[in-house]
Length: 134
Image (cartoon, rainbow, N blue to C red; front, side):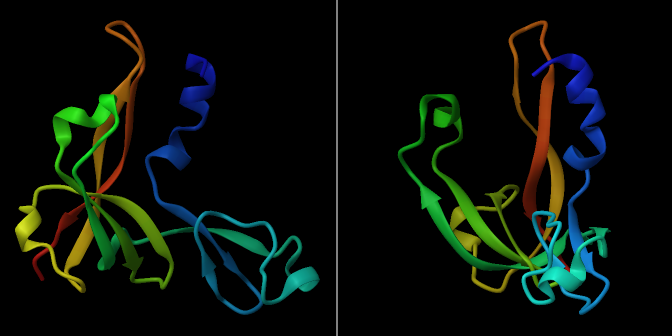
């Protein structure tokens, strides 16, 4: 990816954006241009919607055999998180002992480094999920 394109994409890379149908109010992630419920009547009526970043672990799995670029992280947990808005987002669980992860555990999205393009390249950040205590 070119540097210019990378910087243009920053708002959608560093914020959890989905879309909301102005007809029925349903929220979707990732963003959609047409609501599956309202169909044609939603064309041009879908609005960008920023997700709160808070949710609960719906399901999770522990990865023991990772690809080479993630070998230093193993074992690590990947979860399906049901966001407060009702959509489900997949992401890695961080800042928690694997033995302490439970279905229904409250989590929040955190921005973390996920990779880079060599020593002089672009650093890529993305969302992972960390426990929240509320």
